Length: 101
Image (cartoon, helix red, strand yellow):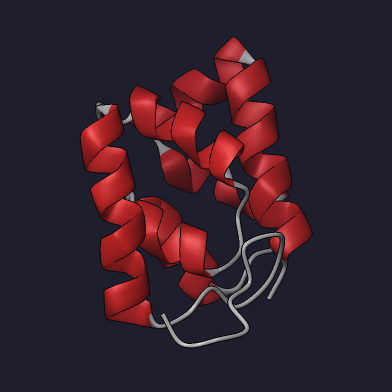
């Protein structure tokens, strides 16, 4: 897993308008620049906020990109909960779960 690159991509997309436009319209043109696993690339292609959260991506980064993906805050929070239900506990990062939910 490459948590650094997951978060770096989101950080870059949140800060660089041109990159964000490509990220939103043609994600496959952006992904090769980041060292990501197939699961991580799939999470971006599918706009799977829940899986990105479970992979350990910081919630602040996710919140901003979810807004660009058209999610309101209620849908964003629901996606985080659904991600844990579907993919299991958060695996890494600040939100890593050390106990059962």
